[in-house]
Each structure stands twice: as structure tokens, then as C-alpha cells.
Amino acid sequence: MNAIPQPGASQDRSRTIQPAWVRIAHWLNALAAVLMMLSGWRIYDASPVFAGFRIPTGITLGGWLGGALQWHFAAMWLLFFNALFYLAMNLVTGRLRSKFFPLSPRAILHDLGEALKGHLSHADPSRYNAVQKFAYLFVMLDIAILILSGLAIWKSVQFPLLRDLMGGYDNARVVHFCAMALLAGFIVVHLTMVALVPRSLLTMIRGR
Ligand code: HEM
Image 1 (cartoon, rainbow, N blue to C red):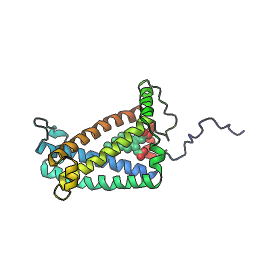
Image 2: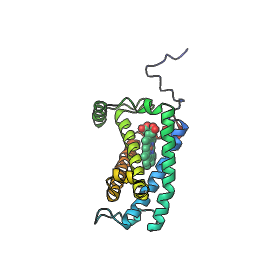
Image 3: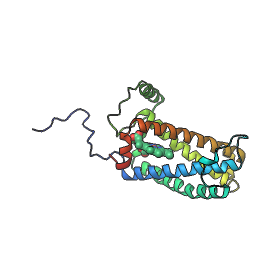
Image 4: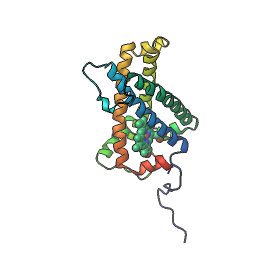
């Protein structure tokens, strides 16, 4: 006898939820982001933006300023080209619109409330709830700001308009640091959420 289709039978377990290009871009981005953050902390320590605030050398990458700069500049290209690829593919395939929109402040607050009460359903792993959509769009924007403020610091003479948009060279360093801190905050929340819903890790590894 044929099985009767159940409501919500869209959860066909063999269906691809995360296409290969999303998974490859995601893991390359995670690698680049971590390398940039750890080497950035060593660069920061060589000339702290906030007097008296230093990052313990033990959790930094590069060993010394010169080494950290090498790591930072190497990982920068990976972060930049991978972000460009991810964004272009999301736009061309229409995935950006279908996966992350529609989105409203009301929906975010509603889903946040449900999540805090433990009522948010994870039955359909192919859909992001409003809080996930917001968090992922937020981190995409944050990484774009990190790249632009980094460019303003690195080539401040060649990109005077960008430097001025950041409020000058010194302010660009503050913007870069704040965007890094927000990325670090995102990573902590992101990893906590993945630990709470381990099924999502499978979709980001094998696609379904
Ligand atoms: C380090 C920087 C990281 C950033 C910026 C980041 C960002 C993102 C973004 C933007 C998405 C949505 C992707 C899309 O649908 O197009 C995502 C999904 C996901 N990420 Fe990350 N990620 C990072 C690290 C990690 C790490 C280290 C893990 C696992 C240990 C992880 C696990 C996942 C999983 C499982 C999903 C799918 C989750 C879901 O269905 O909601 N991420 N991440």
C-alpha cells in the first residue's frame, strides 16, 4: 500500500537543503574569518586603539607584528573573493531573496520571543526563521564593513573618499575594531545555536 503523504511532507530527507557552493563558501568564509580575527588581534596589540586594552598574545596568530600582517593579508584575499563569489551566486540564483526575505522587525521580535520560550520549530531545516535571517544578513553586512574599513586603513591614501566616509584614518580603525567585535559576538551566538540544533550542522556539511 502506498504511504499517504503527510502534511509538511516537504521534508524529503534526500532533498538538498544547502547547495554545494553555499557549503564551500561557508566553510572557506569561516576559515578566513577566524584567521583574520586571530591575526588582527596580534596587529592590534602592536598599537592598541584603546589605551590599556590588549588581547592576550596566547590567543593571537602570527607570533609578531610582521608575521600577523602576513597572515592578515593572505587570508584577506580568501575572505574578499569568497564573499564576492557567495554574494554573486546568491544574487544570480535568486537565493538571497527566497532564503532571507521577506523579513520584518515584527517577525524578528515574534520569532525571538518564541525562541526564548523554546517554542520555535526546527521541523523544516530548509527554512530560516526570522531571527536566523536577520543574523545572517547582519553578519554579511558586518563582513562588508570589515572589508571596507580594512581597505580604508590599508590604502588610506589611495582611497581618500572611503577614508573620509569612515570618519578619517583613526576612526576607520575604531570602525574596523567594532565590526570585528560584532563578528566575534555573532560567532559565539552562531556556535551556541548550532550546538542547540546539531541537525543544522549536517545540512552545512553534506547538504541535506
Ligand atoms: C566564523 C565565521 C562564521 C560565519 C561568518 C558564519 C556565517 C554563516 C552564515 C551567513 C550562514 C547562512 C548561510 C547561507 O544560508 O547562505 C551560516 C550558516 C550555518 N553555519 Fe556558519 N558561520 C561561521 C562559522 C561557522 C562554524 C564554525 C560553524 C560550525 C561549527 C558554522 C555552522 C553553520 C551551520 C550549521 C549553518 C546552517 C545553520 C542553519 O541552518 O541555520 N558556522 N553561517
